Image 1: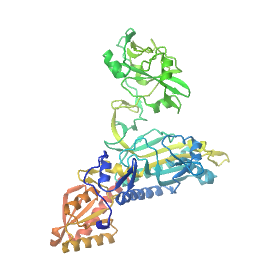
Image 2 (image 1 turned 90 degrees about the horizontal axis):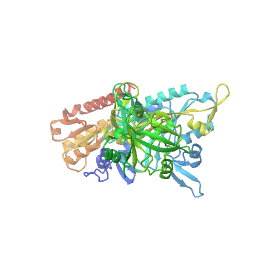
Image 3 (image 1 turned 30 degrees about the vertical axis):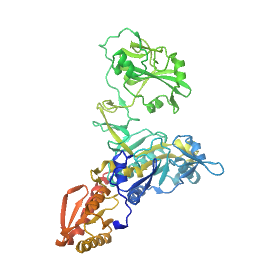
Image 4 (image 1 turned 60 degrees about the vertical axis):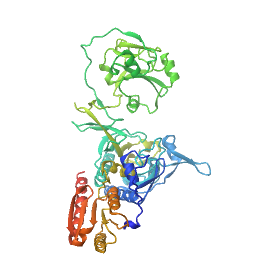
Length: 578
């Protein structure tokens, strides 16, 4: 491709609304342009990178026996209603001219299950794995970072159907391999972490996290045993014992006027938040529960939902809290609390002489103690894990990093097949629900994730496998016949050899060309300048601009092809280890 015929409107200034590195660079490099909040155009460079990612993904999915299909982006509401997901707040809803309800597909479990239940009858037709690469729509409350979290995005979603859990394990392992190889071939090595299934549902699941400072997810890691999980899922190991040497103090009622929050109470009573235990009132399945957690900790609602075995958990309304505690909101405590049960985070069992709400407006109890002053019905791991917490699987300590999710794989089991009555006949003639798995990869988000971890002050540094071009030739002077002749010769020879190449022969200053080529992140750069008259050209790698090499014109193509092959080999070596 000749740059004079290419549409890549680069920007010199950073757009005001761009905060993340990837957002800035993709806008500046002419890869994307904003349409509205969370919705972007992919310009030629951006779409070319997307298509290269998709090609790698298709190759790896096909190797594992998955079959590509294309499902509709417009989904009838009836299918989502079968599983209860029609009322999720992320669903874009619309009506046709006859008043029928439809949604823009945000994920396609129901649609693919409908395909299978219509046409698969026997266990002999299993296993089967169908996937698609398609644009999705989600009504995100807070779109972020350009194509990192959009309202419209490109995703690969795959769905496996098996006759047993053992077969699902094999399908899951195949997808684990396909995902790992895809990421490595695209130049990234995400951390695989345990995760919560969220709105998808199901059993085991894992996320692929690209570790970067701009990530919106918190990842907990134990360096001793390599356990890793996101903050919603991370289990916490119990540490320490009740401090027997600390004597029980007398329970004391203290006036705490207008002190409702942890900060206000700890400041007023001049105690550490670690000596405070907050009592949260939650409602689940129409019943109210008291939840105890240390003052400086945050409740993990996902863990609480599992502890209460309920999907419908919410914080109690103010009116209900005031009725239960007979006090204003902010003074709830476990002593005399009239709820179904009082449950506490594991950490609470090791505390003595704590400060709690008194169920009386403007009052707290100091030196309260479990079993003497109030009872706990059950203990669970209920808090959000944080740096310094103990690992649940060894005696190590958890550390935290920020991560960006680029993939998520689930063992769904029968969550959807039962809800949609999707069955097959087993070898004994009995009717069984399909055992399902689902596997999602954010294709458009990968474009951003790669930019987040691979850049410098001059722009993006793309891996060769997905770069908009593998090689760029910068013609310093389009008016110099010798330079033009050499540039054209190398361009044509490399094009004939199958190299994806850009010849920058624009009528622009050399500095503009150099800046644009660096900004676009093209891995191998060839400069045809004054040295051409001496039979030499300059070759460099984008990720090592200092190591420039002068090469004879006769050997230039051979050197470039070797550099290209070496870059691909490095990615293949990593993928082959998966």
